[in-house]
Length: 111
Image 1 (tube, rainbow, N blue to C red):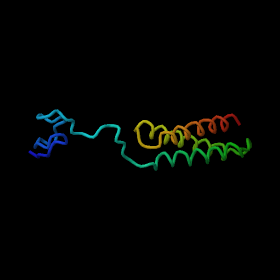
Image 2 (tube, one colour; image 1 turned 45 degrees about the vertical axis):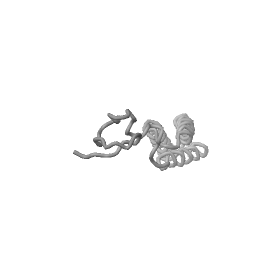
Image 3 (tube, rainbow, N blue to C red; image 1 turned 180 degrees about the vertical axis):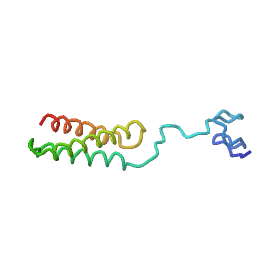
Image 4 (cartoon, rainbow, N blue to C red; image 1 turned 90 degrees about the horizontal axis):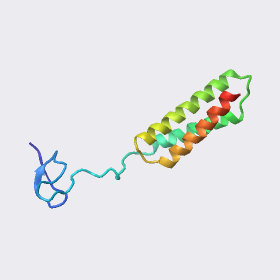
């Protein structure tokens, strides 16, 4: 049995207690304390920009460029969606990446 001190009153409590039995203070960090890094959001925006470059320079006769650009756009969409779903930092970056990647994908499949 492991014991810790309450964040509210300082009394000794069990380490798995969600609330202090003495004062009722919550013992877990709130969900507003976001942890994590921006690497997934940054990766999604970089991939979305690459997909946009492919979409702008698309040549409808170059099948490899269409497939590659579409794959990059789908990966950017997935990375942005995962970042949003996991509520990691960089929400604005992820939303921008999703929009850019979706438009790029639509341009590429429309070619």
